[in-house]
Length: 284
Length: 334
Image (cartoon, rainbow over all chains, first blue to last red; front, side, top):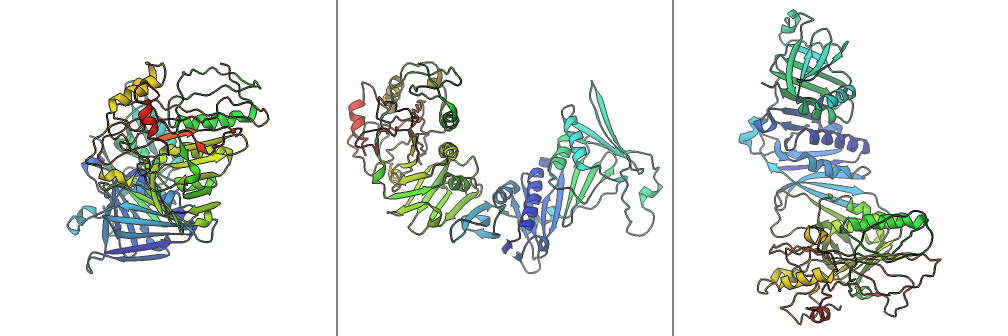
């Protein structure tokens, strides 16, 4: 099992750091899956997470100048590592003006991702900062836990409002209630609602647009026959929603959510070279 | 006592307070003159200043560096990082997270920074060494020295001997002297920990009249004194049964007293005392792998006429009392 990668381009490095920062805000511990062409940060839906799951996919070619990976075995040319993304985030935080960043899987006292940052210095030779981030190697028999989640059979799919606006609304609502209802219809309307004994607050968004999902077999998708005004809704933990919104450091190219009434809300945030899916289950 | 600080000095004074605040809940200072801008009433306590001795000029290793560089190095360590190890050879300098035998590597992120000697304004390594000291307390000095933009001098020796971080400019000199972890401490199984309760008592009474406040609370959780004399390589340990001043048992909540005097160049204030003062920070943890921090903070007037002005009389003996005064004092001179 070998892994080494290198970033020399500052823009790529900053972009990668931002992705890691976002992941660090969403998960305390997660799995990092390495394949020849991609990296994945995966959080599988355990009870410990409150049923939340995350799937974040990056094309390594968009970030790394060098990327070499040898998986556990020829037929399974992948590596799964468990790590604390906050550690990676911290290691990259002070690398903002680095000449180069190298990441390597090592095993000195225990398996580690060694992040070596070459920084410019006043002297002839560079300053080298090395961070050893402990990781756990996830054995092959557990890889099934980390499969890509499928898009649920949703009732409504709708583009999200501007994330910044949505975040500030949800932030204020968080002070009043622990749960929030997201409802949306196929007419591009979305409401965020909270209700307590004393007060109920609803924020209305309209003209959001509904993404066109082509169904696989070419026939009408279930949403086509649905009444356009009818709202699909789910009540979710407000803090989990806020974690997702607050963690976004860059505006995505596309942001949408799929609502399965009373079951789950599936968020998809797409950037040019990163896709992030986040699932928040409905509260009972 | 009426104290007044004028103009720009207030900023430096403020920074000094911030630096001290990272170490202790209390501080004390000697009177200054002239220039009323604002009046603040601060409570303080009388105390007996502690004395110490540390011969900076006898250190084989001396580094001098702009505080900005030190700050740029320390930023790579998490703020929760307690101890760092400085490792030098004539060819390179390395700061790294401190690890010990029972560090759980699977849970700890380790950071290491390698620098070229070129980066230092002055670089002298007489003996290869690896010293481990408390980073948390150093951050106070770094913040303070950045305010003054004065280069920081680092004097040190081999592990176990103290390391001094000092800055000096027109109006002040400040030194932070920290203990470093001694390799000898690893072989200490046989030696019994000295009698601490006496020392504890002596510290309390020596500190003057304050039964009330900080004695009773954990004033300085991060300042921990070593169980063994940190500079045991050189100090003649004639009294093995007696506590060396820095030793403190768990319960000691001794008060670090920091004295710092600032003398403005123009005033020609006569310094009544020529010694610096020092601080002993308090609390030893009982781990068989000695945890330690001892911190001294002394400032010396640049007007000092003392012939041995380079020798800091600033090693805390901490037993300015009837009981152990004589014995302890003698074992502390370096």
